[in-house]
Length: 358
Image (cartoon, rainbow, N blue to C red; front, side):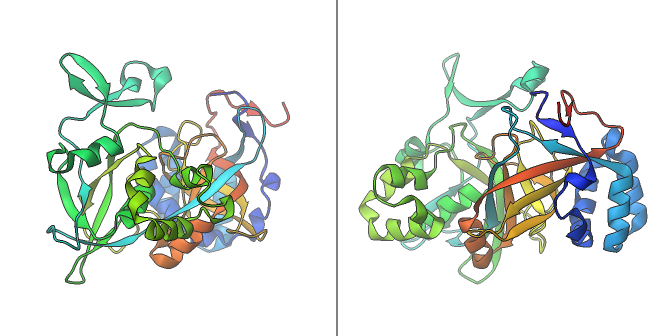
């Protein structure tokens, strides 16, 4: 980690810190503590949070945080403080457990032949770096790309969990990482991220812009869906421009949010996906950005409870908007600049962290 990526600072540096209704973030913080309490540096903080109960007032939460935690400003490797803040949500798509003329797009589980090699197990400096591949003889080669998997059809080594009605809706469900499938009888099945084929994510919106098919300002989720409906003969070309492929697993029924990378349910408007190489999963993070497609300030306490294939970099985050179409509209419009401060226990000194102003 670059020594400038986390810099100790003061509460006064957090814009509108005292304006946020911190009580609204408390349930998400309690969720984080279900995982963090197992870590020595968080144990006392989380035990104290448990004693405060389910619904302390905003003032009590603010005092709790200010006396136990220290804010660290997140910086990019070049020393800048701003980065890209996008949004994501939990979509609902139409699907079925049986294939038919209407439901013919497979929702795949993890292939039995895919290898996952975690370099951090061998080399601590490479923590978080994983390689996906497959064996050909005694050699590990890259795993199949999206185009290759689609081309296999019934021969694919990935099991089929269910069948989707719309390939674009399924694609965006893969981008979001989790969602719900509305079955023909009206019931819903929840599916969540299980693994990924190891190929880098490539934006299909950016591909459309580069092809001259859409102007940048219209390369939103709605714009991409409209283009796909008007150009069905180029659907495969569009989807295959992104070689990354997400595999799912069926999740237990639940009324709460989807489970993030931390292993706890996400909270709409208070959960954040981050790059864990800089921001520890589970930690509270103060976000200062603007609302989607506006200059209206959006400044609030969030919890780093998820990761994402496209969320790479220090000052880089994905704002979880919640479930369904309305959340999807907000998420699809969100592409703002923002700043981040991670809140860590007072006695925690992140590896490589510097002092503000150095």
